[in-house]
Image 1 (cartoon, rainbow, N blue to C red):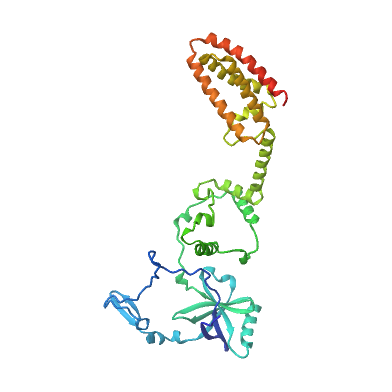
Image 2: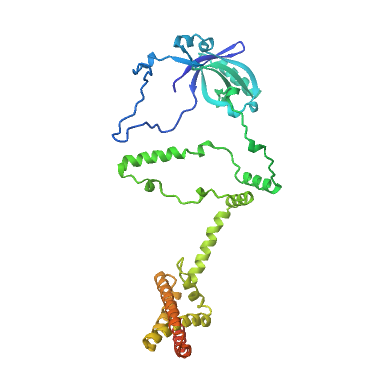
Length: 403
C-alpha cells in the first residue's frame, strides 16, 4: 500500500505522527468505452467552449458561478485556505460508539505510526480500548474539511470519514404516516422467520455475483470470440420470480417458514412416491389421460374390460354397417383388446400407450359417425351390437387370463 497523506493526531498535548492509507479498494472489473465499428478507444477531451481548443490539465482552474457571475479560484488561492494547510487530525471528543449513525460513515483509512517510537500510538489505542469509546476528529484532506471517527480494528487505528449532518437527507414518506394494523399472529410468524434465518455475520461467505459472472463472460469471449452464446455460457434459468404476483402477507410468511423448515424438500419426495406407485400400475405419459381406465381395469377386470370392449364394439359396429365385414371388425376388436392388455402390463412402453390412446380416439370418432349415419335403423344396430359385443368380450377375457 502507498500512503496518501501524512499528518499527526492531536490527542490533548500528545502528538501522534501517522501515515494514512486507504483501507478499502474497488474490486469491480474496469471497463472502458470503444467504437463498436472498429474497436477504437473513446477519449474525452477537455475542450474550451470559448476558443474551441483542447486545454491541458495544468491550464485548468476551478471556478464558482452564481447569479451569472463566475469567480475563478487558482490552485495557489485554494492552498492558502488555513484548513487546507493543516496536517493535523484533531480529537474533539470521545463518544459511545452506539451514538454514531451508520448512515454517516463514508470511507475508511488505516493509520500507521510514523515515528521511531510508536508509544504514543499505542497509548491512544489503549485509551480507546479501556474506555470503550470512539474519538470524534476533524481534519482536512483533498481540499475538504472533514469530520471523522477514530476506532480500533485488529490493533490498528482506523479513521472513518463521516458525512456532515446536512449531507444526510431527511426521509419524508407520507405513506408511512398511514395507520397500519399488524396482527399478533403476523408479528409472531415474522419473528419466527427471523429466528429461522438468524446467524453470525461472516462477510467472507458472500460474493459479488455480478463481478464473477462478468469475469466468466470475459473469459468466454476471449475463448470463443464473436461466436459466443450467452445462453450457453450462463444457462437459462426458469422461474416465476419475475411475475410480481401479489399474495397474502400471512401466506407469504407461512411459505417462507415452510421453506426454511424443510417443507420445500418434502414436496419432491411426495412426487417421487407418486411416480413409484404409477410405475407399479403401468407407465403413463403426462398428457395421456385415456390410458388411465386401462390401468384401473387390472384390479377390476369385469368393469374395465366391459368399458373398453363396449367402445371398441361400437367401432366394429360402425365398420360392419358401412362395409359388411363383421368378422374382420371382431378380429380387429380382439386385437385392440390384446394391445390394451399388453400396454397396461408393460410400464416402460410409452409408445404403446400413445398408440392405444390414438386407437381409442379413432374408435370413438368412428362410433360417433356410425351413430349419425345409422340413426334410422336403430333396431338393426341393436341386434348387430349384441352379436358383435359378445365375441369381443370373450376375446378380451381370454386374452387377459394369462396375465
